Image (tube, rainbow, N blue to C red; front, side, top):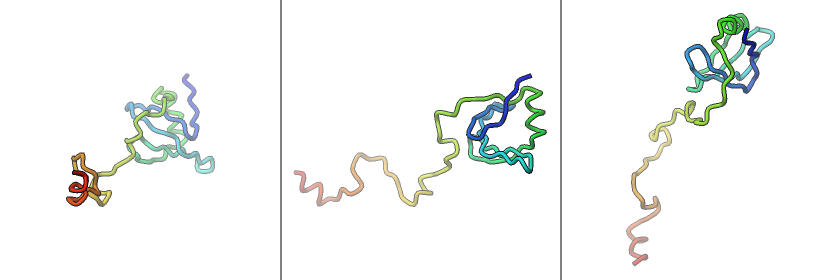
Length: 100
């Protein structure tokens, strides 16, 4: 049997090949709070965790190298517009005339 204890801060790979991190363990409620790579959070009961271990559906994994999974920010959310240009944002026609 594969023994994988939940450790806060440790990353795991679940049965659907999704990465998740254990973010809290509540001994009193016997639950494990996990956060998936996409940022969603859920609770798993100790019994469910142990059943998944028996079925070998949970395994330890390395933390993802790309941390953008939980970041859901569009350019509109930043309250500014981005231009695809090499000019700096503070460049004005007067500034360009001074460079000549």
